[in-house]
Image (cartoon, rainbow, N blue to C red; front, top):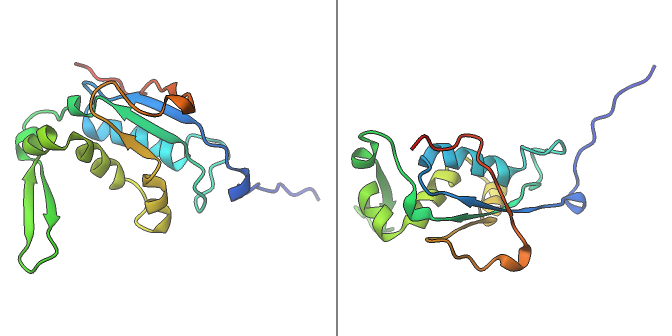
Length: 151
């Protein structure tokens, strides 16, 4: 009797690519789901859940992401200073002006595993304001988004 054997990816066998994603005009959540898929490696046939087999992703134009409807006014991000009673809420409209990179990073981080693997994966996400990024030496390829913006 012939059995089919599923190959499991090893850490030594991982080959990661570099991608550039233009976030201009993209909805935060729809963009984050695709970035999380790339970072995790779920788009590859060799996906293994317990191995970091994903790619590196460079996001440009982070300040141009959008939220639909009233979400831009209603969305708030929680932050704790570490002191008792140190909980702070930061609205999206303020955070997108001061730290647009953090808006994209927090959205993607929420879609990754909450363990050591997730912490390792999020380090492969590089988010920048504007068109410029310091990763030209890695020769990143442009990634076409599956859910392009309707704007």
